[in-house]
Image (cartoon, rainbow, N blue to C red; front, side, top):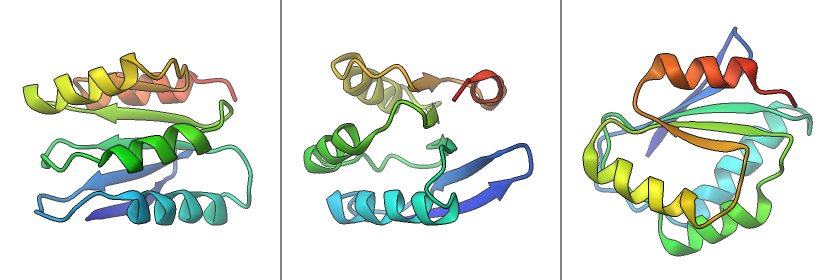
Length: 118
């Protein structure tokens, strides 16, 4: 489903794979647990790269993300395909979260993450 690694600039790089897997609530729970464990419960930043994937989270996965999302954490989402930009954009538009943003380029996403104050 995804590859997660630590970037020495101070954030996790979460890369969605090109797969037919379902991005459900279980996957979202596992990701939250991983980030919390790896950050020792401290605030963290995530660069979510969906460039090579058209896998879209289920409604339950989105609901869990918004329920557990904490303002001190930051998530920058890279979406280069038009379908992913539209879907992710609509998801974020209705959520009112300020710590998660959608970007078309990796450079813009990294710049925002690096400047995000926790």
